[in-house]
Length: 298
Image (cartoon, helix red, strand yellow):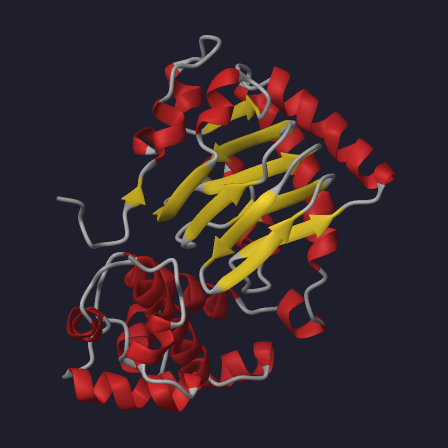
């Protein structure tokens, strides 16, 4: 019987990385970085995949083709000549359009990108806008530059040091296109860690509602944490936490078969009535009404 939980994959357990490779890669590379051409045979076997999470980054370059992608509670249509970077722990599903699909897609671990970098230059800091993904529809000139970096990354993936440099070059453009607000571009490391910790706790089904628990984990006072959040984002720590939990509730309601009572328990509400009142206040719908409007729910 299929599990009602949202599946979460490690690097070596992801369905796409367990498919037969068209060339041999060193074991070390397969644990940190792997790139595929979208037009190759096995890349076309995943025209549709149900909602899931990964503990690593997913990078996709679309030459021809595209599709409909669900990312947490956002749904986007991915166009030809575009790039999509999905961050770890984001709930992701897709359905590709029919017809040719060309370009590249691949996966890399945060540790692979961050090797040797000071904290201010690591990927969590340079992509600190808070969104679960970065999507950009390119001009022909922009896509040509990405394609050049992507091809170098693809051909050098057996040589990890060279591949790492090409990945960083490619992500430089993504960072520029993300266009974070002035506040987000100067987000304090503690705020970045706070947002990442929320995502990790939600993805691993740990209790996630108590702000004091996050402050303790980050070795700061809760009021100080809230002041840092407000300065960096314009929102209090409690509001950021509530938004993250709301998004997770939406994901679980539409992407799993969990009973609403189980979702309430997983999100650390003391009973289903409390969760229902809280959700309606945030979304202006009851959990059952929100779930019912998604025809894809099974």
